[in-house]
Every structure is written in structure tokens, then in C-alpha cells.
Image 1 (cartoon, rainbow, N blue to C red):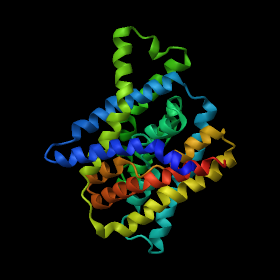
Image 2: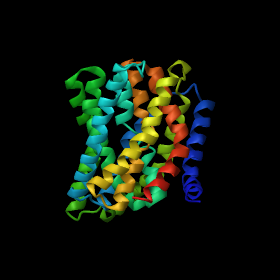
Image 3: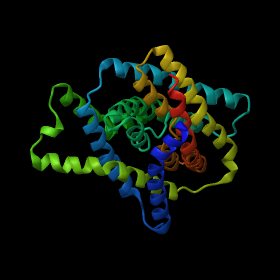
Image 4: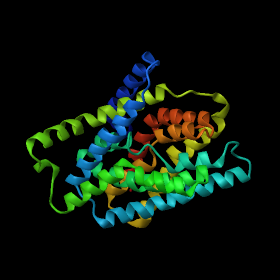
Length: 303
């Protein structure tokens, strides 16, 4: 019963993604780069800023997410190396590693956490995404490219990092965005309220642009299995070991179990490192996540 109740809660999110997908296919001649920029720089940033500012994280919460994710991060590096050595994956191990370390914890994670736990808990999801993104877009990029400077530069360029820091510093000092003058508060409020819909439509449009090539299907299925099932099950044991608060633990597990992040597709395209595999992993894992997310929510009720 809980599975179907959860599926019912998240189904509207996937319907909006489907609307974005159909729209993207209908207007396939148009470039969606501007929509990506709007999502990254405006919608995602405002949502992260307002959530963190309204619910400033405690240091112990950040530490719990950091130590929990570090284990997932190290596992995401070691596992593909081992699988490559014993011949169980055919593709570049760096792509598999990046896909395992970087989930769609922001674009899809925020709406899912909001639907399952409540809007006030988006701030907790933002904490996870900040930790994940900082490591993935620094060390992860170094693994993909071998370029340390590029990894550090990418980290400092992340807009959500600055939105997170500003929102946290102001919120921790009792300065709320809700107390801004009406001419500033109202636009922020309107963007915040529209953010989740914009983000979900962008996921759909981005998925519609993905070129799928079936010859990478084996590595994709293996990565999806680890990304959606094995890693979040490991996360359940991690949160028990770290003795994380039950709701925080549930959010951590759900975030770990999000599908491969959209940025894996964008980055493999940009760096020209097997973009067909990056595209396929994003598409397949997103498709199957509609089933695995309710299963994970059922699982975390036993934490």
C-alpha cells in the first residue's frame, strides 16, 4: 500500500517531466541551452537560496551528510576500477564513476523530497546536493579529464555554491529573505514557487534531446542497478552506522537513490568522452526511477 501511495505522490512530477519531453520533441529544432541556464542560474539557485535561508542547516547535519557521501563517493571511484579490471564493464571507467557519484539530487531530488517529506525539507536535500556537487565537479572532473586545474575551476564556478553560502550566512544571522522589501520579496517568492515546475520541464526537454545508442546498454543497466538500488541500500546501513536523525536519514537515502544526474549527459557531450553512454545512462536511470523511488521510500520506513 505504501508503495502505491508514494507512487501517487511522485506521479505528478513525472507527468510534468513527460510534458517537457513531449514539448522538447515537438520543438526539436530549438536549442534548449537557455532553458538549462535559467534552471541552473535562476530557478535552482533561488530554490536553494530560499530553502537554506529559511531553514539554515546545523553543522552536525552537514557533517553527517559529508561523511555519509564521502563513503558513497569513494565507492563510486573504486567500484568501476575493479569492474574494469575484471572485465565486467567495457566503457571508460571514469564515465561510470562520474555517473555513480553524481545523482540527479537537485533537479529531481528537490521535487521528490518536497513531495515525500514536505517543502520545508528541501533545505536538507540542498545540503546533500552541495556536498555531492562540490566533490563530483572537482575530483570527478579530474577523474574524467585528468586536469586538476579544470576540476578546481569548475567547483568555484558553481552558482548554487554561492546561493547556498549567502542563504546560509544570512539565515544563520537571523536575516530572512521573507523580510526583504516587497519589490524584492515578491519576485523571489514567484520564482521560488515556479522553480520546481521549470526544473521538471527542463528535465523532460533535456531527455528529449538525448540521442540513444543501444550498444552501450550493458554498462548502462549495470550502472543503473548500482545507482538506483545497490547504492541506496548501502546508504541505509550508512545512516544507521552514523546514527542520523530518521527524517534526515530518509532524505539521504532518497538522494543517494536518485537517477544519474543530467550533468553527466552535458559533460560527456562537452568533453566528447563517450556521450552516447552518458546520454543512455541518464535516460534509462530516470525512466526506472519512477519505480525505485517508491521502493526506497518504503525501505526507509524501517530505518
